[in-house]
Length: 324
Image (cartoon, rainbow, N blue to C red; front, side, top):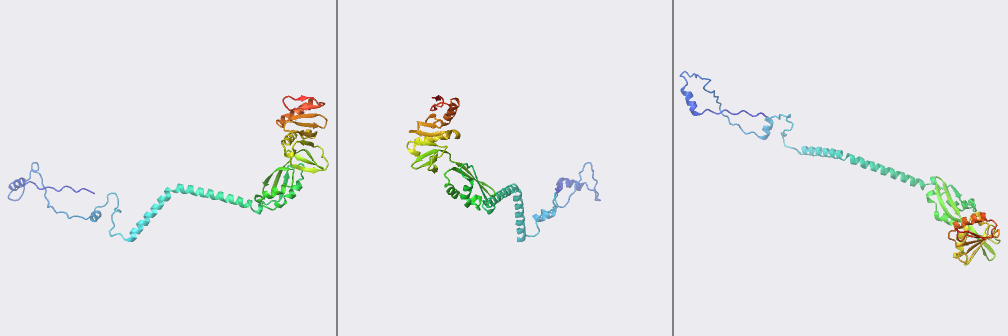
């Protein structure tokens, strides 16, 4: 807004009197422009005060078009409602703009979790559905047992989903096979159940009244016959199959290779430290305790190879073998 120019002031009285005296009778005034200054006077008119609204209306905005001027009339409830609505809309827009990254990250997490739940749920549902039911049972690892007999004993599991195979029922069915030492179940989707069996290793026979029983290293009876079976050593241990002497003899026999174990006629011990083996060729083997049976087996094989006609072999100290 332009500042108004200053209002000229009236000349002093002395100067006015001098001007009246020097005025000619005819009313003309000779003014020396070089000595007398020109003074213009004008009547003062008092300005009436303006209201704020009138001032805003009279003085335009030098930088704009007057759009910021106050409204002519009072604000109504509709104006207030529209202003509040516009404010809320602008606030929501700003919130969405500032939270855009977090919303994208949250949406990504939700999608990932939903996909994971969908995959897990689908996998679990398919695993427990008839689509993965047992149709074939395969038995592996048997040497003496007949796989067909084991498969027949487990036939109750055919038709069950692989995830619902009854481990208790399988164990109860396999207990009827004394030759089974351990077993492991493997599910091969979509329809195969594999049973891996480790059979017990017979180490000798125990003579009982009227019969001979084939036993393993733990003394478990594998089979019973009235005649002594060939290829097994007759175990004579003080205290029977539950004694420490029997455990030592069985451990020594278990460490021998199958072909050498078949050459042992008798294995006897009164204590865990005085094991003696009798070979079918007539030679006697002084074994001692069951400690270090693997090293003693290697020493015996070397002595038998170097001295095949010896009558005795002492491997109670595997580092120093004695041939008799």
